Image 1 (cartoon, helix red, strand yellow):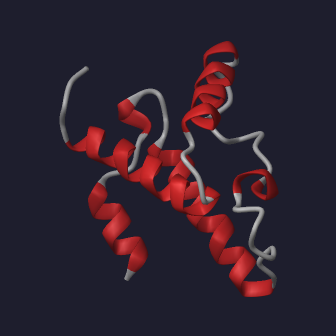
Image 2 (cartoon, rainbow, N blue to C red; image 1 turned 90 degrees about the vertical axis):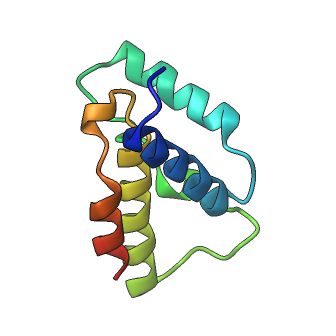
Image 3 (tube, helix red, strand yellow; image 1 turned 60 degrees about the vertical axis):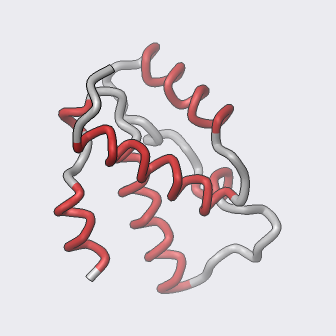
Length: 98
């Protein structure tokens, strides 16, 4: 494994997913990687329902908040892409959060 900026992007995605889920996402990420390896045409998280990712202890977000959470989930799944070339850069992430 090559350690570089794209590794940091992946790590950011794992931590962000852990915050969204309210628990360690290890098994979830493993299942994502397995499904991505069996269907190379679909990006990671493409067939994942947002309700299955969010912390079940919290009420589901509504309206504009739900839109924002969905956007963050898209960024998180982009960070978790198996091929580092398909991951966004940290610069894009910083621009997203401003």
